[in-house]
Image (tube, rainbow, N blue to C red; front, side, top):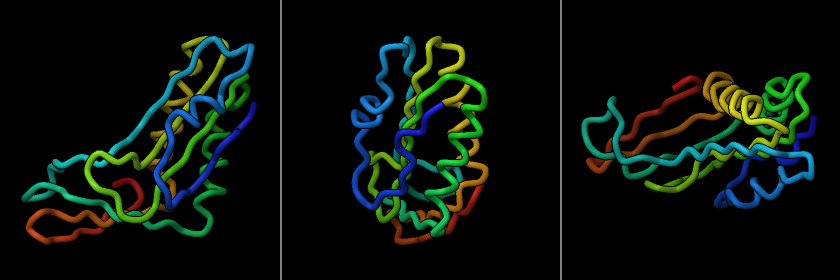
Length: 141
């Protein structure tokens, strides 16, 4: 098992760098997930224009732990990053890439990583809407 990238970043995320990081001669399946800022949120009265992410200092170590647990006993290589700072609609907030020998494991690991990020990564977001309102959302939100 290998975690090549587990990063909290204040700069734009590069999905291709994550895909390249999981390339190995034994890898026969690569799955990825890119979570982007969207304009609609069912809890918002008007359109979302930006999200502002902040992270606990331990967030990067938590990302590494999430990836390691998701890999478990599988032979896999993983690259994942979460963005902090102010992001506008369409920008990538999270990128996950998983390489394994076969597709079933790649899909399962990728899904477990993103679900666990939503459950337990100490990252919070402030959501800004076009009417000027802002709302904080925390872990699991």
